[in-house]
Length: 409
Image (spheres, one colour):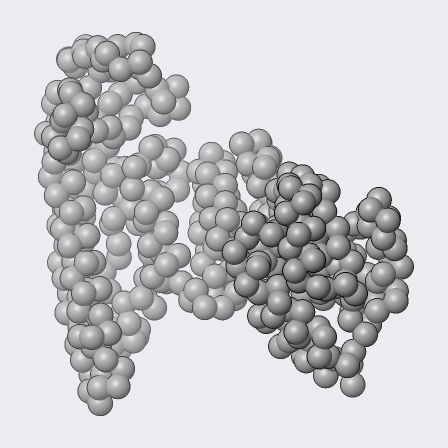
């Protein structure tokens, strides 16, 4: 994208066979190439203009920079291999001691490489390889801080991972390794098992970019929202949306689809009213009437074409049938074939349930209003019409029912 970046790293190959067998090399391309560059015209349909690439210091040092990155990845791979369960078992009485030894050894290896990266960046300052490519691999030295101040390298990197990053450098966005490096921070140096830990890391990253460069901040906002929205951690995505959207420079026009999904998900959080379902259009009682007549209502999204739905629907029927509570069930089918839908309902024999299907499948407005991403899945609605729980698997319904009614007793 020559209109976006002044420089970017590209992989250049001259034949399809070269691409197939990996016979290509990295080249730093420039938008406004100086006179001492070579000019090369490609035959690829996607590129219709001449492109230039530097034939001097930029590409002379590029290979050295890529070798340093490869060495970093080698250290990382060796570290993970040493910590494999079969090599380092938690049942081993010397687990803590062995783990600490590995941590110290790996920290020393990282520090040794980081000194080389720092020397390279100082020596070739001003080049893309030094200022942009290796910037995000340049990490602070932990030195003798472990285990005196930090028990693990991960706890150290959680705080200082971005210390060497220059978020005001817009060329950072052309770095082909940027996404992977962000993911490494969120995967390895973040407490991914609780919401507070994830929020801490997300806030740290967004606050670091917020005041330095609007385009870099927009990218980070987009990246993180999409990551957590599509990985099922919408609570994190909603936090990013609510806290940082006003700081975006152009209201994230290229994330409009994500914004719509976030707005929908916010309305579906527990405690909010459940979106109406036009049951009366198919000769059933009105939605609010069904809600009022039961202590709790289960909205069950399924399809007769879904093997998992056919497997777990009878299990849901057993759970509901044996509970002494007045529970209503509204099934919303994603079927498109009316005969197949009705055929399976006859087999299921859930005659006391309310069955709805508009034959629109995944394009149904109800499916969109409830942000359904998979089947089978349930929503639990209280007598006031408010959402209690969302996206509950049928096998977990019994547990949620016990929890809910015990809290009421």
